[in-house]
Image (cartoon, rainbow over all chains, first blue to last red; front, side, top):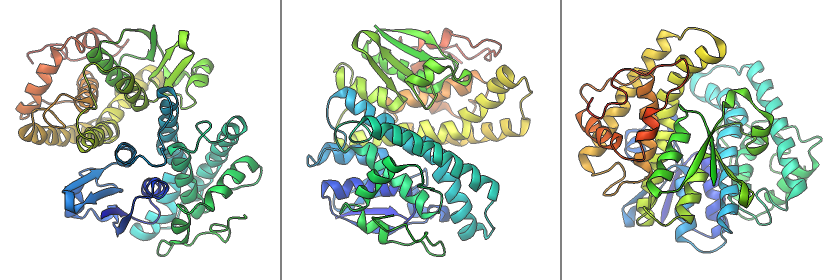
Length: 223
Length: 223
């Protein structure tokens, strides 16, 4: 049985969980707080980041969320998430990098630092200026997603792909942390509402991070 | 003909150039300063980052260095750089992420900001404290590479792979910017000396970034 080391608000672990859910791969969850820098965890991943996935029976450990996703895409044929022509796969991977790096760097990362790390680890209040900047950039990012959905059925093109999962993972954490203002983003809202009702997504939405509470609309499919 | 948008000290463009060189793919260079935020460049890549590669005859544009590498790995069979079993490919991709994110975030990124951006764009002197911290972390990173080479022929295992190219790309930029102290890292030095003599690497080493000069040993195979 695969064992996934993660914590509830890790957007990269959420991306992996959505992929495993869509592909029908079973796994158990192992709670890991990467900020604790546990020795056994650092042995598995010197980068000290979640997610890490382990298959003890095979003696296999995989670190890095994109390496994990590519691994399961290569080894499990069902429901291709990096499928299609090489050019289409390049567009999927460009968008995954966009959400993993740009959206995370602009929005999810600062929100997690201010509203989660500071509370859990440093016991400090959030910096309102950083929060406002992250929410302003979230709005720009939703404009870009609106634009993509205006031109395509799904974010990368005509099929559901890892690009959608990477986007939904980041947005869901930002939304949990109160960083998303949905008004004026009807295209992205409709895409995300559909996502929320997928079986791969429901378990994630019901989980809670200790101390930090999501807004009332967070789990609702109709929001 | 492929056209690669890049600037001489972009480590991610260097990784792509090493891959194209190893695979024997021809391309021409197009100089792009991403900090200029040129409109036509942002149209090709909303992230505003190099590298971007274009094949005008095919109407194809690919952004993001990992998406570009995966594309050429899928479409050009010669000299596989993400080859082997799925588990081995996962280890290659983990290390590529390590060098692209950890090494870049700890070492190359701060060095580029202090010694290149500040000089070229902001006309400010570098911050000595940031430089010292980057060089200290560079030393820790070289320790890790020493450890890998003590246990393996190449960074990911028994074959030359994209992990080696990603590492050499970051190290070469850090070395250009005077951030690498080679003393005490004989394993990594021997690995890098061999790399410097590869035909895919020679053209990169002879290029210069305006205003910023590399140290005397930078281009030497015997350093």
